Length: 172
Image 1 (spheres, rainbow, N blue to C red):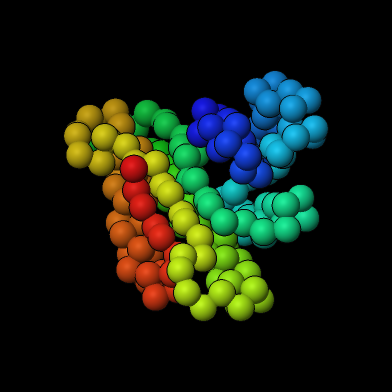
Image 2: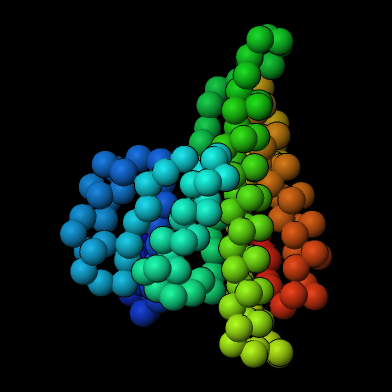
């Protein structure tokens, strides 16, 4: 939320996304519909929801230039319990949702550059917030640490894949 407000305060158009529409409205209030902030509620683990988010962003602002992947879910893990599904749940929520959203937004950024005839310079930026959990072990955070580390690797791979397309991909 602080990142979204920072961008919006500097004149950027911002689309915030979360599963919890009530929480989005409570956090953003009526500001979301008046100025340069909008919000979208949906489950980003679903491919159709990601497509709808990108479409809603384009409908509201005509283009997308920056993606900040900041959404994370944290669940306790039971590392010695084979029936514990926290690792899969957190991979779906924290890694696959962010990866698929990055792919969809990158595709849109490339399309925008082609439509605008931009042959030089960056065409967009994807920023992923990382976590210290990728470097530190804690048994109760097994699923979160694995999903965060997987997302770090996906981010590095995307950075290499998207460099020729002139999309900057960074983890912070």
